Every structure is written in C-alpha cells, then in structure tokens.
Amino acid sequence: MEEVIIIGTGCAGYTAAIYTARANLKPLMLSGTQPGGQLTTTTEVENFPGHPDGVMGPELMMKMQAQAEKFGTRIAYEMVESVTRRDDGTFAVKTGSATHEAKTVIVATGAAPRHLGLPNEQSLIGRGLTSCATCDGAFYPDVPVAVIGGGDSACEEAGFLTRFASKVYLVHRRDELRASKIMAERALANPKIEPLWNSAVSAYLTDEKGEMRAIALKNLVDGSEREVEVKCVFVAIGHVPNSGFLGGLVDLDENGYILQTPGRTSTKTPGLFAAGDVADHYYRQAITAAGQGCAAALEAERYLADHEGH
Ligand code: NAP
Image (cartoon, rainbow, N blue to C red; front, side, top):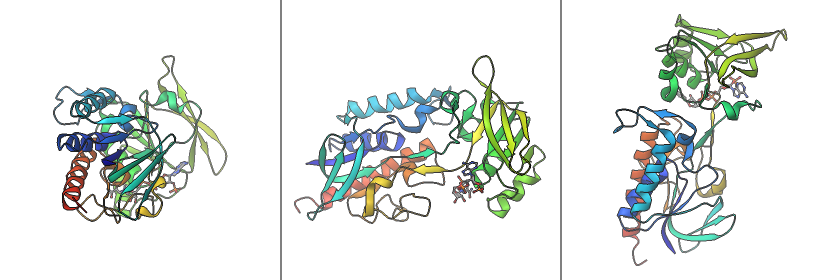
C-alpha cells in the first residue's frame, strides 16, 4: 500500500514528488505516454524563476526528475487506465500492466493542446509551430506570425504577440470571434492584428531548413486558396485536459477540467488531489503548475496525518 501515488510527470507532478519524497512518503509516480509533460515539447524556457539565462524545456524536466528521484521517488512508466476508491477509503490505480494501491492520489496529468491534425505538424512543433505565446513569442521579433482560433486564448495570445511580431494574423474559421466582448474588441482594435475571417489552414509550408515559412489558407465561404507568409503559427484552438480516466471520482467543468475545492487542490473525493493544467485552464504556466504540485503534496501529507491509524 503506497502512501501517495502521483499520476503525471510534468511540473506539477515532479514538484508534488519532491515535496512528498522529502516528507518521507516514498511517492510512486506513474508517467504515462509523455514523460516530462508539455515542457518537453518546447525549446527555451525564459520565464521559470531561477534560470536567468533561460533553460531548455526538456533539460528543466530532467532536472526536476533528478531532484525527485534524489529523495526517493520511484517512477514507473505505466499508463493509468482507471482509478477507483474502495470502501475503506484507499485507491486502486489500474495501469496497462499492474494495479497499484494507495492511501492518497495526486492527479497531475496536464492538458494537451489541441492541434489541427495536419500531416507535418508534429515535426514543426518547436520549429515555428507552438501553442504557447508566453513561452515562444519573444523568439519571433519583427516578423509576421499567425494565431489560429477565435476564443479568449487566441485574442490574448495575439495581443501579447504584438509586442514582438511585426504583424499578427488572427486566423478564424468563422466571421465572428467566440472570445468575450472585451477581449475581442481589444484584439480587433489593435492595429498590428489583422483578422483573416472564414479561413481554415489547409497546410503548413516549410522552408529548406524544415521551419515554418507560410500557411496555406482556404476561404470557407468562396473556396478560394491563398498563401500567407509567417515565421510562426500559434495554435489556440483549446486544450484537452487529461481527466477522462477518473470516472465519477471528480467533478469536471464543461471543458473537462477537474473542479478543485476553491483555494485548495482537494477534489470531491477525500484523499484525491488535482494539480496543474488538468485543473487549471486559466494560468497554464509551468510555475503555477509547480506551485499547485507543492500545494497538493502538502494537502496529501496533512490528509495522511489526519487519517493515521484509521
Ligand atoms: P475556446 O473558447 O474553446 O475557443 C477555441 C477557439 O478555437 C474557437 O474560436 C473555435 O472556433 C476554434 N477552434 C476549435 N477547433 C478548431 C479547429 N479544429 N479548427 C479551427 N478552429 C478551431 O478555447 P480557449 O480560447 O482556449 O478558451 C478556453 C477557456 O479558457 C474559455 O472558457 C475561455 O474563456 C478561458 N480563457 C480565459 C481567458 C481570460 O479571461 N483572460 C484567457 C484564455 C482563456 P469556433 O469559435 O468556431 O468554435
């Protein structure tokens, strides 16, 4: 019987592991299919405190892993299929190859940015295709870029990118933004943002180095095609939180994010905590995920202390 199982090995998971390991709870981490989480898909991270010269995303995650393992965290590369709570309040965590038992569970499975599904997009991630303007916007000064989407994220990212880019195309499949009125108005009033309405990206076009050169756009009203030169495409068509495997143990919001107790990482199931992007559609930053991982570890520790001997 484990004291704590942490599901997910992104910033939230590793921080929870460092804290629970140092509290001598000997955490078991279950890694899933993307060890290291979303930061492993980015290049340089310039906004994680403590790294004044920046740090590569994969390197930061390897250091977090080393720090977690140094204090006794065990990592199993298994994909969790389901979590159930037993009558005695403990949990059964079923993976593809085993069933683990634990007194507490910290869910830190993150969210996957939604992509368009175009053939070469995987090879372009980090080479002119990204889902995070905060992370990558500063790498594209004085060049045209595009944001895809019409929601609050797209408008926010487009506005942020105008600090760097020479021009920001806002590519949306309809002729009206989904974003809240204030965000939409702000984006459309910005002289550096040019909306391209009723437009769908039909291809990402690359240069001889395999980096983003342009997007091929199809006009969804008249069917016409055009090319627009951009050095980077920021995809902001939503995220998919990895919360589906928890069944009825947690309540989800309308987009699938786990609902936490306000101001806490606890959920409606005692002993089950959620941290990071799987429960946070608002901040979505490495440092805020790490902060929640810390909070979940402290809450799990207190829960175990309160239930000792029960
Ligand atoms: P969202 O509101 O779901 O918007 C996604 C956008 O992407 C929509 O405009 C949608 O088009 C478009 N889209 C979806 N699939 C597409 C596809 N396959 N091809 C092309 N376009 C596609 O997502 P979000 O903007 O990430 O926001 C998520 C939540 O976070 C929202 O509740 C939002 O209010 C909140 N948020 C708030 C703030 C803030 O308040 N500061 C900032 C960011 C996010 P359609 O419009 O045609 O459906």
